Amino acid sequence: MIRLEGQPLVKMVDIEKKFRAVQALNKVNLEIQPAEILGLLGDNGAGKSTLIKILAGVFPPDGGEIFFEGKKVNFSSPQDARTLGIETVHQALSLVDIMSIARNFFLGREPTRKIGFIHLLDRKKMNEECKRAVTGLGVRVRSTDEFVSILSGGERQAISIGRAMYFKVKLLILDEPLNALSVRETREVLRQIQKVRESGVSVVFITHNVYHVYPIAERFVMLDKGIKLGEVRKKDASAEDIIEIIATGRMLNK
Ligand SMILES: Nc1ncnc2c1ncn2[C@@H]1O[C@H](COP(=O)(O)OP(=O)(O)OP(=O)(O)O)[C@@H](O)[C@H]1O
Ligand SMILES: [Mg+2]
Image 1: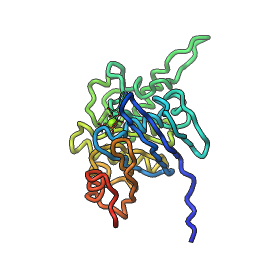
Image 2 (image 1 turned 120 degrees about the vertical axis):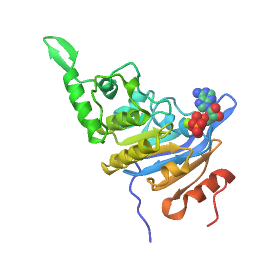
Image 3 (image 1 turned 30 degrees about the vertical axis):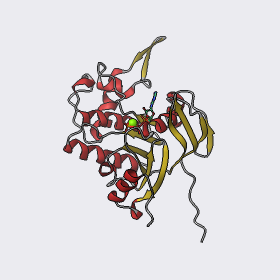
C-alpha cells in the first residue's frame, strides 16, 4: 500500500556548513511535519545549534536547500524567517535583561498608538496582552513592567514560549530550553511546549539529554559531528536505544 505523507512544514536538503577547518554540518537532511514535536539530539559540537541557526536565518548554509511549506526559501536575516512564522529561542536566551517583561515580549513587534502624527509605544496594551499570554501558560508574574533580570530560568522560558504562541508562529525552535531549570520548572516548561503543539505549532526541541525530550516528542533526529546518524519514531525506539545510537554513532539493526 502506498502511504501518502502530507507536505512537511520544513524540508532541509543536503545542508552544509563549515567554520574554517570544522565541518559543522555535512549534507544534513531534516524534515519537520506540521504540529509535531521533533527531538533534535546529539552530543556537544554535533551541529544541532548550527542546523537550526541556518533554519532561523542567523547565517546562510554553504550548500543545500531549504523549503518552507513546499516553497524554496533563502533567508538573509532572522527577520526573514520570523516573517514566515519561524520563532527561535536560542541556547543563550534571547531576552534582554535590562528591559521589562512586556518590552521583551513584543521585542521588534511593539504595538503603537498615534497622537497626531506621533507614534508612541502602546505600553498599556503591551502590559495587558503580555500579562494575559503569560498567565495563560500558567506563569504568575507580578507586573510585566518589571525587568526580565528578576525572572527565574523557567519564567524566562515561559515568556519566550508565550511570545511564540501569541504571534501565532508555525514553527517554534527551542535550543536546550531546560538548561539550568529546576525539576518543577522543567515540568512546567514541558507542559507549555505540549500546549504550543496542541495549538497546531510544530516544535523542534534541541537537547543532548534524551530523557528531557523523550516523553513529549514523537520523532527524534540524531546528529554526530555534523553528520545525521538517522531518525527514529518513538514507537520504534526507547530512550536507551537513542542513547545507544548517539554513543556508538550507529543506527541499531532492529
Ligand atoms: N560561529 C562559529 N564559529 C566557529 N565555529 C563554530 C561556530 N559555531 C559553531 N562552531 C563549531 O561547529 C561545531 C558544531 O557546533 P554547534 O554549536 O552547532 O553544536 P551543538 O550540537 O549545538 O553543541 P552543544 O550541545 O554544545 O550546544 C562545533 O565544533 C563548534 O565549535
Ligand atoms: Mg548547541
